[in-house]
Amino acid sequence: MLTAIVLFISFSCLLASIQCYGGRGFDPLRKLITDQRFKRSVDYLNEEAATHYLPVYVGSQEGLKDADRVLMLPGQPNGINFSQYSGYVTVDLKAGRALFYYFVESEEPLTRPLVLWLNGGPACSSLGAGAMTELGPFRVNNDNKTLSYNKYAWNNVANVLFLESPAGVGFSYSNTSSDYVTGDKQTAADSYTFLLNWLERFPEYKARDFFIAGESYAGHYVPQLVDLILNNKITNQTFINLRGILIGNAFIDFEDELKGSYEYLWSHALISDELHDGIVSNCNFSSISEVCNAYIDQADDARGNVFMYNIYAPLCSLSSNIPSISGFDPCSENYVYSYLNTPEVQKALHANVTGISGPWESCNFDVGINWKDMPETVLPTIKELMGSGISIWLYSGDTDGAVPVITTKYSIHKLGPSVKTSWYPWYSGDEVGGYAVEYQNLTFVTIRGAGHFVPSYQPERALTFFSSFLEGKLPPRHN
Image (cartoon, rainbow, N blue to C red; front, top):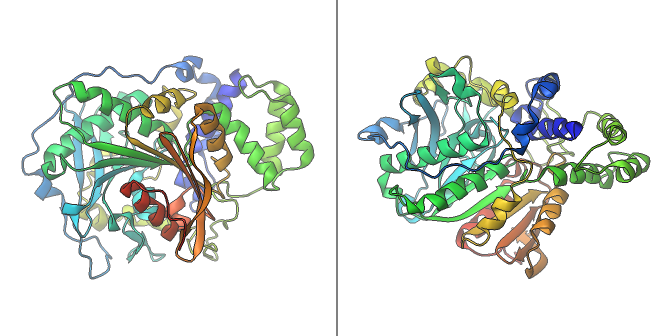
């Protein structure tokens, strides 16, 4: 069982880490987790993610919205017709714990829903990943100074709120050092507190249709936050008009992740038949033996230096920045790192850099390796949410080897929903954008040719299915 726990931690803490773009060198996270593997308590993984549903801190937000307005980001292109805000929301006054957000309104903000976006990790930034390399309105150019407009940004159809959570991630911080040893429960509680306070700061969004979206380890963040929101309807807190959730390449079940990952490697010709047969014959992923572990180690070595978050994407080379076939620059993380560590940019974003211990980073590895509670599965929570009446969508980029499409299929099979609309190809423009199937109280969508960070690799297709999600419709069958 200990081997299974080690592998679980290694996998889960890598998810959604844009360090893995390869832009700023090797990924140090796996080494750090390996060094700490025998120091971690087994109880961390078996601990339930339940939170006591009590009234939470809500502070005065008077005047803070106007103070948070971003007049213009350095290097921003001309002709931008939407408003931007960024700043801090205090979630624990006594501890001095504050979470950083970046909010991008639609050009028609009054008629569009509100969407909260969460990147995973755990402990990775929604600003650096989601906003700056995926679904936000801007991408950082390779000069590290200027921005280009993303015409497929999700604020075309929604008002999008990016949250850096928990404290210690990105520009979010705490004045209490013990807050940096955290986990699923505290992350959900702080995100809920953030929402209540943010809605007081932006009261025009209180009655708005509200959706939560995210990717990877947000497969934990999103269901746990939603569970907290729905259970707190009975308290005297602000009503949140939650309509649905959307989770991409979702890490939601430990056994499915391991089983599906090596099945995916074999089915995409990254490991041999012999290794695959050895894994199938010797691995029970609920209790991994030493023999199974040996085969897994061989499989990890055999696949070579392939970027597992998009198995067909090039690695970043500082000597020659070659875009992938989708047009996404694999060195984008380098540009974001440089841009967000520019004093003029930090000033424009109202970032309190004295509150963080070093430069802005895409992921806080110290927080990640000290993660306290991460249940092995969140399928029971998702199962419960399926009966709540909200819309639940899972989606997968089909070239992601880190949390492959097959892992989500395994998890849906465990949930056992009946099929309402059979698997079919959906279209974006003149091409098949992917495939979709509607179950009872659950929809699953694949995005063709996209890796783990779907909007990075297939921005047009991502916007197409996201628009369908907001409209409560299945992705279009024809162009």
